[in-house]
Length: 198
Ligand code: GDP
Image 1: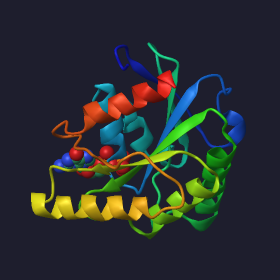
Image 2 (image 1 turned 180 degrees about the vertical axis):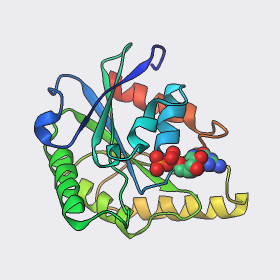
Image 3 (image 1 turned 135 degrees about the horizontal axis):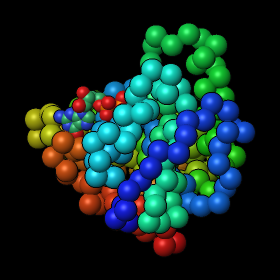
């Protein structure tokens, strides 16, 4: 997995723009600035792949990447909780995300990224509620593990695990990652590889 390059395919602003459902998809979601682009880049071993999604205009699209060595599609979802976006735009992409998350048969798992300094916020909980309602599999990935003091990070990990354990459906274990230091990336790659095999 990730042995050969992952390439940017396109940005989608409406469902009709999405590629056909011809391969396994995983999606990455999270609040703006959670470290989503950094994680996708670190996973794929590049430094610029997901920068595309951080350029103005691209931030409100579903950005599609595809592996050249596996039948895998990666969907980079618009970061949420971005206060400055005008309301009609927020409405449009909330609807797009909802339609994508609830109607995509090839979507195997959503990785919900949460900052390890803060733990789940209200909008993260809303996303998890929506995924549980739609019976979409998801895994929480805590980011920026290298940032906080270690005693704080342990507390957030424990708190996040407890919060996930209380949810209506069972979910894979919470992962702790750092794109900067590489922590947890091997585990995340293993999880993705397992999805491709199942
Ligand atoms: P996005 O908006 O979710 O795509 O977030 P970015 O990937 O652009 O990251 C937001 C900020 O957090 C940038 O300044 C990154 O350099 C920083 N960042 C992302 N991941 C890490 C990490 O693992 N460790 C540290 N220390 N900083 C990170």
